[in-house]
Image (cartoon, rainbow, N blue to C red; front, side, top):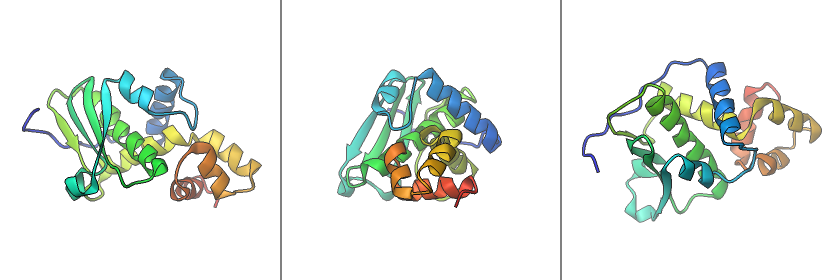
Amino acid sequence: MSEHYCQPESCNLPRAEINNFSKAVTKHFSYNPGDDLLPIIQALGGCIIYDDLWDLKESNSGSIVIEKPGDFRVILANHTSQLRDRFTICHELGHYFLHYLLPDKETPMRAARYGQNRAETEANWFAASFLMPEEEFRDYFIEVGGNILLLSEKFKVSQQAATVMAGHLGLA
């Protein structure tokens, strides 16, 4: 394992381009909303590690450590919900694609949750678009009359994530 990791740097793409990039990734992996994410992680050469809360430093819960393309691990605390973990996994995939593969980094990278900056926002945009594609989300929102619980269940995200997406789309 490398002792020196770079931090993610913003790709500075507009949200619409990140959404399009996310759509291309979902299409490449034939991902449909609610599908299991582990096969995608494994196809990319990564793994998911669940650590005990007491064994993790605060900034390690919800992080990605990338040694090189095709060799990374997503680290999650084992006390969080499956729905939250799905968003975190996609957020970390956002770092992998947008901040490691896209700029063609050669230095190992580590992204951990500490604060809010543009790179973190971009990873959130990627995750939201990946898990809750805007058109499908909007259509289902109308179909279920804005029921956040049903949206959460369909897209397998937390109610908070569904609420944020509804707000972003001007639906709530």
